[in-house]
Structures are given as structure tokens and as C-alpha cells.
Length: 469
Image (tube, rainbow, N blue to C red):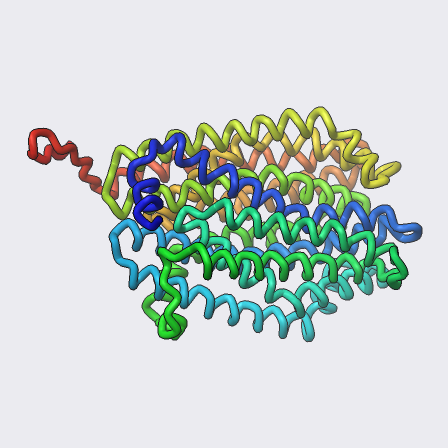
């Protein structure tokens, strides 16, 4: 079985390998977005206070993204390092990396547990003066933090499964958690089947229970099926050198995801100076947009281990094909998403019961911001390629450009113009296409640099003679 997986990573054509690994990962990542959008759909249709609850979840969202960022980034570092170790036939290093990743998941959980108990309220109140919104947001976020161990451990075990080619197993685990969340949401929020009506607290409990289910299923798959990675007790002992290697690769991914949190938090404040409706419209749009972004992240997560394995083999041809087909598939995903959002902008607003100014702002956000998808796809694919080729700094530069450097100045300028004339509120949304286009130009230049920096030896065996090209 191990030889089959090894041969798959070594010999299967890249275009086919990326699809076989990418499709399950895309499904898995899209289902990750389900947790936030399902909660929003149900709370927005509460009998009373639906839009207030929706705004509360929007304010909690940046911290949730940060939790996901740290967990997934750690998993990404382990994913690439394990895949590279397997490509180098170093099973001991792969096992030690996996053990240290699990240890780090525990540390991450403790950190967010403490924050949930001590800092959730202050964090929510920093974004709003509406006490009802603050109370709902604090209740929701505190539960998500205190019981975040399911998310932390699943993020690691998911990536360990993917690193050895078991992406279908990680997808099944994700599906099980998402289904659990969808079933429990209305039961807990509305008080079905004799349960107490818990509102936003119910949404939070449904979310964390779903995450725990995903973790347990992924753990079972890892122990039973992921046999290429050894699970010796001694491998769980913290190793500073391995942890450094994990975060050398994973830190850019953490920062990349965490910058989404920083960006959303900052934009909540900037847009809040215009109106509460602006914040709600953007927050809801971003959760819908996550389906597309996370689909692109899924393809990126397929690109990384395949490219990293090829990088470990020093196979320039396969790396080149990863770059080519990785971009083609990612751009196709984003174009399909662009078309879907342009067509279904109005129906989406009806699903969430929006009306008046909030509905108008939400529809304009859907139609304008989605123009940036194609360029976002290019940037996301490059981030995965850079990480796999030990270009963590380059990946980090892309993240900072698309989520901070180009976002905040344009958002601030356009928001200032919009505040003085609310009839052109849509102008603020132009920030996003501009940021992605400018970042794509920088990404291409960085790729040229990192390609030439790595002097690959593409070797063909012809008549037992190795010819370096």
C-alpha cells in the first residue's frame, strides 16, 4: 500500500495527480466554510434580532479566522515537511514531524482556551458600541474558543492525511463534521425537539461539536489508514529543530490566513464609520466568498505536497507542471465562482432575509468584489508553490500585499469619499479588485526570482547516461 502511494506521488501525471488530490481537498475546504455560513443563515432567520445576531457573528469572525489560520498553518508546515521527507525516503523524519505537529495542536488549543475565557469580551467590544451586538458576539466567540480543541487537532490530522495522499479520508472527516453542524444548528438555535432555544449560543455549540466530530473521524483514519507515517510515542516529544522546520514552512501560511483576520477586523472598523449596514453587508459577503476562496485554498493544498514531493526528488519537469496545471485549475475554479456570484447575487440576499440599505450594499459587494477572483486565484496558487519550494518569504510578501498593503490605503480613501456621499457606497468595494491585480503583478516577479534561485537538475536516463538539462 505504501509503495502504491509512493508511486502515485512519483509517477502519476501531474495534471491527473492534482485533480485526484485536489478535488477531495477542495470539497474539504469548501465544507470548512460551511461552519460560518450555515451559522449565519440560521441566526439571520431567528424570530427576533436576526440582523443583530448576524452582525455579532460578523464581529466574531476575524478571531475565528485567526484560530483556523494558526491550526491550518501548522498543519501546512507539517504537510509539506512530511511530504518532502517521504519523497526523500526518510520515514523517521516524517514520523517525528507528525508527532510534533500534534503536540503543537495541543499548545494552540490552550492558547485560545485562555483567550476565550479572558479576552473574548474585550475583543468584541473593540468593534462596536452596540451592547446587544457585543453581548451576542461575546457569547458566541467564548464558546468557539473554549471548545476549539476539535478545530486545532483536526487541522493537523487533516494535513497529515493529505501529505500521504489520503485526501479522500480528510474530506470524509470534514463532511461528517459539516453534516453534524447543519443538523444541530436549527435544533440548538430555534429549540427544536424539546431543546431549549439558545440563539447564537446554539450556533456556537453546533459549530464546536461539528469540529470535534471531524477531529475524531480524522484521528481514526490516521491511525488505521495512514500507515506510511509512523506513530511512535517518542515522536510526540517536542523537538525544537523540527518545530522550527514546521514553522519555517507554515508561518507564512499562518500569517497569510491571520492577515485575513487582521484585514476583516480593520475593515469592520473602517466600514463601521460609514454604517452598521456596511459592516453587516461586507461580513456576510465575505462568508459567501469563502466558498470560492476555500476552493482555491483546496487546490493550493493539493499543489503544495505534490510540488514539495517533486522538490524533494529535484524533478524540475514535475515542478514545472505543478505550476502550470495548478494555475489552470485554480483560475477555472475562480471563473466559475465569479459567474455564479454574478448570477445569484439577489437570491443570496433573499436567503439571509436582508432588506433596505443592507441588501443593496450586499448585492453591490457581490457584483463588484467578485471581479477580483481571477487575480486572487493566481495569487493563491503562487502562495502554495512558493511554500513548497521553500519560498516562505515570497509567500508572505504576497499575503501582506493582498491583505494589508493594498487593502487598507484604498479602503480608507474610498470609505472617506463614501461617507460624505452615501449614494456611491459601492465605491468602497473597488478596493478588492485593485489589491488583487497589483499583487498578481508582484507574484509573477517573485516567481521568476525563486525559480532562478533554485538550480534544479532535470535528469533523464538515456542509455544509462544521466543528462542534466
